[in-house]
Length: 342
Image (cartoon, rainbow, N blue to C red; front, side, top):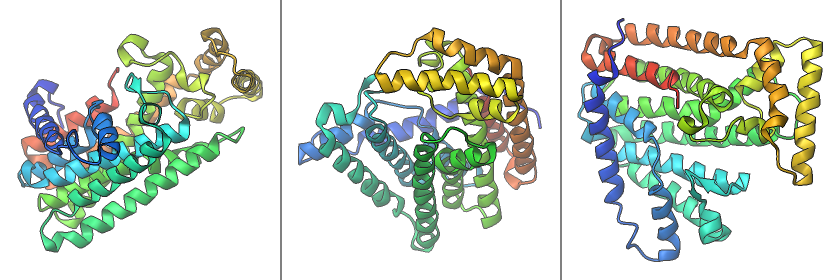
């Protein structure tokens, strides 16, 4: 399957995003009362983002033969749910910034942030159920399943931060729950709204899930090796926070005893700095990056992504939607997400 250039479906992507942005604008939360509840919600949604999940939902709907507008309520539901998770993640992580702006709990207070996050989740459900009655049971079942799995993944991620070692298989399970299942479900729900068969809808879930895993691998690679100005984040932010990510887990899995010792020693130094409230400097992460280079984590990351891409190719090729322009565009879009440089 030839990969079309991004320009071949850029107009479709712009159309999907325009639909989502207009739908979010029409929520009318800037004037809703009580302002203490809705102002934080309006503020958080105005911070922007890739709108990746609703875009995938609308794209899948059209690939299945439907019209994007049909799945717009579900696309908005997915975006609202995603932002609900981010808002509460910021609280749990005590993050000061989100997309370069103060987080909701710092700007509006902790109680308002928790309550506004809850309301985002309820608003997501309000839109998810705007569908034909015959679709409702399957839609709600799918949304409930994924919502709970995202919570499971978040808890696993928090648990990992109290450990000295995390295996590749359990880390992959965590990121699958925390990130990949929502991408997969965005495609599956869109396909369901477009009239896809249960088999095709499940194949779309699998494509989204694998794209999500590979997307996360690339995100973690960019955290260390990307251009900070283009990527929009500080160099080696995960290392400085002593967080587990794909690169750290891959490195540990493929390191020898000497390399494991170096990784343990230098991560311990960073953890000590954090506990003392001392700033972690770029110089503190360089020894870890040198070990990553020795192990060849870049090639390991490429190998992981290529395995995902191969399976994605096979899944799309086997389905009816691969024979139209939407299928080709979708495959190209998946590749562009996986291999992005920002």
